[in-house]
Length: 475
Image 1 (cartoon, helix red, strand yellow):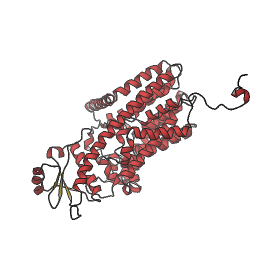
Image 2 (image 1 turned 30 degrees about the horizontal axis):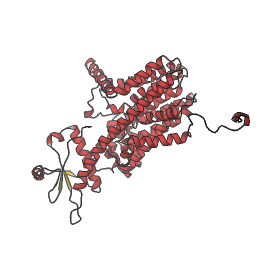
Image 3 (image 1 turned 180 degrees about the horizontal axis):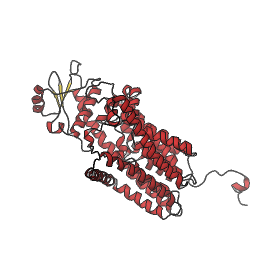
Image 4 (image 1 turned 45 degrees about the vertical axis):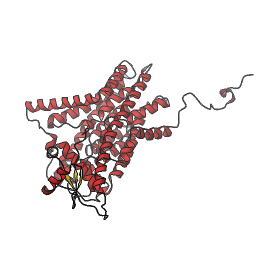
């Protein structure tokens, strides 16, 4: 006799090939392991904070710290200022970094949820690969060192991506959602708005082109509303309806054909630097897009994605043409989605497309993790070097007292932007170690003695001199 089958006996099957763990377990495990693999845990627990983020972690009127309220006239980040008033100035670098990394993990979980195919189940290994590839954005890692400033923006990103599926069910909901998340992004960190907009394009799937085009128009209008809100708030607070762009951003307002040529070239160079920095992942993304173009099921989705990306690129280019300003490539968060999403869309395809998509995601995940580890390790090495100097300079003497710290920096470095950033970062680390006392620059009488000592930490009796190290290679 043969054994009765599960179907004949009415018993439920005990297992099936490719056993899928519970969804919540996969997400939690991937996020935890991913944060460890990328070394994000090190940055979260032992944060390295860049100089211009410190003002968002300090009380008002701290010496050598920029006035956070006054920065709104230059940058218009009113939501960041509100966060600083309520939370930031009362916290620490550690609490800010933990909050930022946690919010980013929540955002990744939400975006991962949006990108998973709705019409088919993924093998758990492919699902894990997708999650890691979403987490390990080679551009987002470069924002980890501004937790005080950028936490509001990542909270907006997390809230936006988790509410997107609900909002996309009705046109009215989606309109309100798009307006809110875009305006809040403009008031905190505009690149986040572009990421949420592209996520919305993917969420629409193969819905009629009318819906996609309305979404594109809505994004541009919502962005303009956000800018108008900034202008209005600046007009009320400072009597200036607009932004006063800082000189270091090299603004070049459009007044004629010469300015047009200069600004267009600036943007083209910016795009060149961006894609040169992402050469390997770009090749993967282009390869996935080529495969998707030959898949009848993926092609309509890919075309919608390209239109969405074109809107983002066009809006950024228009801003550069009008103002002459280009942003650091770390702000081009949409670029990671540009290389990731063609591979994601292949998972919804036919024949070999899902396998090609899974392979592309695996390559992107590996390259992304490596990029995170290299970037974080470089910053953590700088943190360790600076911490060693600070610990030595602020160590108690035999009598248990600590001498005030003064800073010295080579004149050639002090006059450069990278030198100023390096000195400012070290200054705030010393302030933290001294319980809020900000170190001053050296006096003329102390200069010769510090230079003659030939060491980075010099005990001058009444004060301890610290020589600011040269700017790190990553700066």
